[in-house]
Each structure stands twice: as C-alpha cells, then as structure tokens.
Amino acid sequence: MRQKLQLETWNRKEHFEFFNQFEEPFFGVTVQIDCTKAYQNAKEMGVSFFTFYLFKTLVAVNEIENFRYRIHEKEVFIYDKISASATILRNDNTFGFSFMEFESDIYDFAKNVTSEIDRVKNTTGLFTRDFSTMNLIHFSTLPLINFTSFSHARSFSFEDSCPKISFGKMIITENGNRSFSMSIHVHHGLMDGYHVGNFVDLFQKLMNE
Image 1 (cartoon, rainbow, N blue to C red):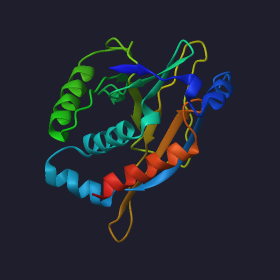
Image 2: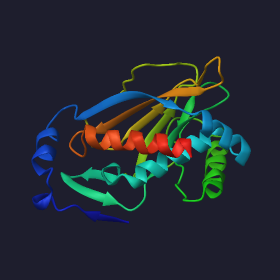
Image 3: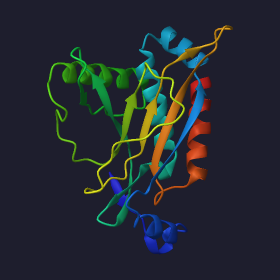
Image 4: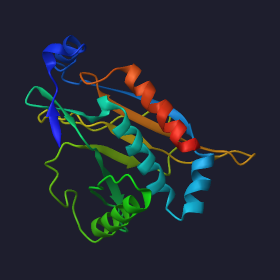
C-alpha cells in the first residue's frame, strides 16, 4: 500500500529538509478551470457534476507521483492509491468529513460517493468515522463563492502533509461557457510549483476529454 522514499538519493532531499522545518510549510495557488465540456459529459453519463470533477481530481492526483507522497515521523512514504476526504453539507447547514475511496471506474466511484454522502448526512458532528489514514486529499467546495484566493484553517500541533483542493462557484458566460476556481494547497517539502503546474495542466486536460 505504501513504500518508503529513500531520502538520501532523492534529488529534493535538501528541499524537503528545508521546508519541513517551517511552521507553515504549505503553499497554494488559485486557478480558473474551464468546465464546459466536463459539465456536459457529467450530464450525459448520469453522474453528478460534483462526483465527476472529484473523480477527475483524484485521477490527476494519483497520476502525479508527488501528490501521493506523505510525511510520517520525518520520513516520506509513497502511497499506491489516494482517496478523498470531502466536506459534506447537511440540511441543518453543518458539515461532516467523509471518506470517499477512489475507484478507477467512475461509476464504481459514484457509488462510493453516493453512499458516503448519505451516511454523513445522517450523522452529526464533524468526525463521523476514523481518519487515521494519510492516503487522502482534503477536498471541499464553496458553490456560493467565486473566490480568487483561498486559505485554510490549520493546526501546527499535529503532522499534516495532505494536499488540500477546493472548488468555487460555477460561472456561466453569455456564450454558455462554464468555469470555476480551483485552489490547491500542498506541502512544499514534498513538491514545488513545477509539480502543481503539471497537476493543473493534467486536470484541465481530463476535464476537456
């Protein structure tokens, strides 16, 4: 399920040791994503648009190796598969954390998403299950806000190296094109702007297919 990365032979060893000392080692960017084709494809496939772009996010995350790196006790591990912990809004306007296991088939993944949304909506509180695993991303949506920047509440008292990806309000132009903001926050000890750029390019490509 995971293997240890050999730090001594890693070409980013010095980068990791430098940024891993920071109180705030995360950096983030916000980009605009064209979702015109993706929205149409989701409707034609009969899956929710939320499920569709969460699936495409995880496809890209699992493709870019650095997004599968996690830090545990000052060691770096490479996970075979990354899933998602998404915030799920309830009818009383509170939210709970979910765990949505990634599947390479979108319809199998959609079943996981639907089941987990139903489960969280019928619970109370924030932590509705065990979240001891690190092979996930933190995922959230702000469908009412067309944001141009984003920050996260963070505690520096416990180890955290999970990427955090958030999406904003869908904007529709006069000619019918659709887009939304995507925020990406990642641990600088594990990756740089180069890797984030590759992730954004791949995600946009997947959304355009």
